[in-house]
Image (cartoon, rainbow, N blue to C red):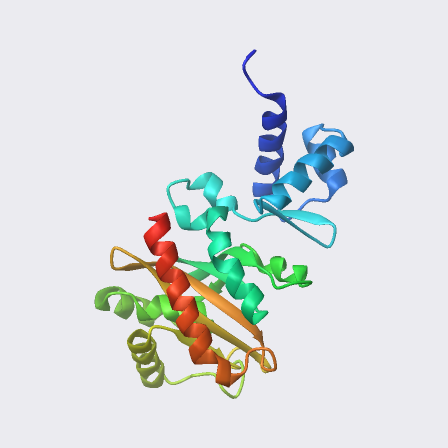
Length: 243
């Protein structure tokens, strides 16, 4: 016990409480851990600087909570962020890492554009694979047997006038995504919103997807090919360096 770092132990206590919550205020962190507010603030500030924890609306959230539970899956580690930040800064769009989990895509990492901390709110959310660019990208890179099983479970709902509701058209769209190497949600889920998704491939399998999104004024159609190309380059870099 003499060799235990008390500061590190307090930081780990904070991470464990955050990983098991939907966000905690400074006062709640202090109360749950028994750490003084001053010390808790310093620890949280440090964790935010390393982007292990994020802050939004005066609450703190895990930014890589899956990493604590699945340390072998490096794609969920905060060390992926430096590879993505240049894209966020160049295009002024928020970026997301999505992990295929069954019939859903789970938002495991969020790198918001400047002055948009509210984007952190969807951290940890699960959304059906067919409802966004990242999910469609993950579907497009499944092997044929897995894809057929998944398609039987999918319900194509009409969210906007641009939503694909015909299964044959949806399957054709997946083939296009696979051939071009990226997916687009062009106001299919929400009017006025676009998203581009690319796969992160490891040993021939899509283990995650990288997405970038904004409104239609921020992410214009004329930008999509250039953005997708640079996202694919970044995804390849992540695959090569972290796996």
